[in-house]
Amino acid sequence: MKPDLGRLLEGVAARIIAQAEELTALDSAIGDADHGLNMKRGFEAVLADKANILAKPLPEALKAIGMTLVMKVGGASGPLYGTLFLTLGKELPEDPTLADLARALTAAVEAIKARGKADFDNKTMLDVLGPVARHLGDGTATFASVRALAHQRAEATVPMKAIKGRASFLGERSIGHMDPGARSSELMITTLCDELEACA
Amino acid sequence: MKDKVGIVIVSHSIDVARGTADMVRQMVGDTVPLAYCGGNPEGGLGTDVAKILKAIDEAWSDKGVAILVDLGGAETNSEMAVELLDAGRQGKVVICNAPIVEGAVMAATEASGGGSLEDVRRTAEELSPQ
Image (cartoon, rainbow over all chains, first blue to last red; front, side, top):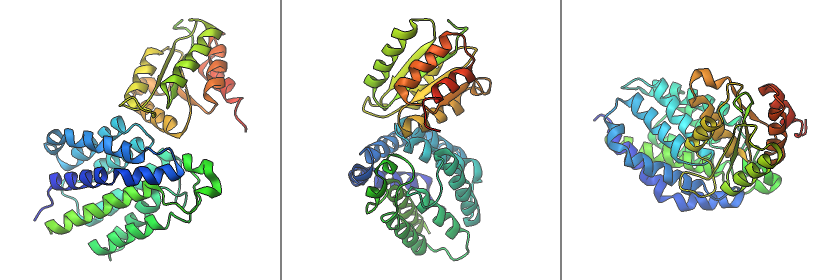
């Protein structure tokens, strides 16, 4: 069965909205306590525009999601997640294979690095998205292995010292907390795996 | 006034943005195009690409526009806004690496004296540790 974009979109949005309080709590420990609220606002706006988004082919739909997040999130995560979806929209064909997905996510990771002037091991969303992009391209990825990797890489941000964003102001005190952006990336990836597996 | 570099102030807080703009006006009056914005799309603390685009438009000058920002999201959202401008305008907008209040006052003072966009940016950035 071909994956249903509407179902993927609703699944990811519902998961982010449901976990908004957890994301905000993570952000209150090492940031400005708005990540969950901002992501919730962004994905509520995406859901409100769902009919328009789903009328488009996949690449254009992804760009529309990205632009909505850019305009509605209200924090740095807007341009960062916006860049993720905009780049996927630019790189993916209408009916992508796993290899297309690996290549497009790798391009998106590079675009997010440039947007955030960040790199791996800075305690950010990149610490989840980068390893997942590499795993998708290594020929061994299963739904279970991608979910496990996303979870493990989000957990791996706990002992990291933040180098980017407001968490970096805390220096050593940022150690011991999970990065909220790594957690929201994990939530999106695991939800996509769940939904795609259910369609398979 | 449109022969002077424009100044845009982008803070997470509309109060900080407005207060900074008041301090700029006290220094340079209305000799420099000036606009400010602050707050997320719902009015809470944060920044908003649409408001930043509107502020750039309000402060537009053919000599260019210098943006002063406070914390990370203000810079990231301002960079995003600049990329959404027409290609012809993109090269005439800079985001200054400077403290927002002092940077805005210094930048506006340089702009009011007729400085170029690069002069304005350099003056604001002299405030930042190298």
